[in-house]
Length: 309
Image (cartoon, rainbow, N blue to C red; front, side, top):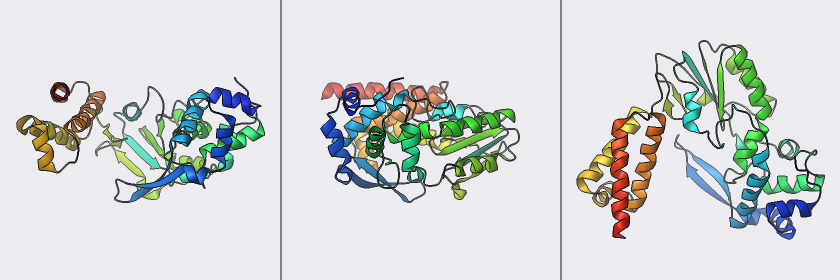
């Protein structure tokens, strides 16, 4: 384990000049811009997005410091080799699936929690703990647009994930956490929600009551956007939409389809969009022959367009 006591050592390993680190940390409002993006429920989410100079620092912190910190195996987001598909795969074929959502997740993270847990005194001197926390924190929460925030969340919740995981394991319950979505599955989930709420409140987090969802095997069970009742599948309506889009592209041409639908994208960007969807469908269900045929046509069509350019 590397221990950082001097600013010069930290700056060397980050590859960023000491003066730059302090200059940026002392003028944070000038290095963020606030943007709003639409949410699935129709609302809007505000993101604090760092500029290139701060983003470069945060990426280096993520790569050289945060990536070395231990996280729980129950955390499935923002980790190499994990993701939405692997998260959902843990909950396939269960009698009950319970999804819980943490309310105002990133906004509820405390400055002191980041400083104490992510940049502990055993590794960093006090001035460096303050400096690093300032570079990763903004106003009263974790900036959702910062490359450091996802890793910080996993580090902060490591002990909670381990406690919940152990408690669930004793009861034959499967637990995983994808960012602010907690998922539990098993035969009987009595007491699970109450236990999760109790653990979260010790860290200052609260559940979003409107997003609590318990589904038994007689209804469609969804985990991180995938159906998990019997095997793993992208919802049928999404598969149909992708298949229909590819059909119209093949019949009328990509450019004509874009004109008909009013999408303001280049043909290559739209093909990449559809390739992303077909890849996602095949990742969830590699045996989907129709998706594989669509993927092959999209790849050939993209190559054809690239040759014309």
